[in-house]
Length: 113
Image (cartoon, rainbow, N blue to C red):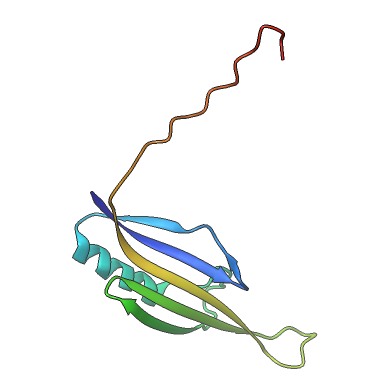
């Protein structure tokens, strides 16, 4: 079949819809691409040039757990606030695919209901 990099984000205990990045090539290409994504992904809410902290853990030969941190200081705060976001990155092979058949509108009954 085909290979993908799957990216799942979790911020404040809220999971976001996972993203799928198609990869041309086999397992090794997908694993290399997944590691690149783990080392370079940025937080969901990120301003270019703002420094971020990053810890990347390899949890299996094909997956990584990433902790991203950034520090913010607003005028009303007495100190900086640290925002933490977790990202799981996996290389995965698509092993089964069944195309969705679109639903059809309901049929009208004899009584118009």
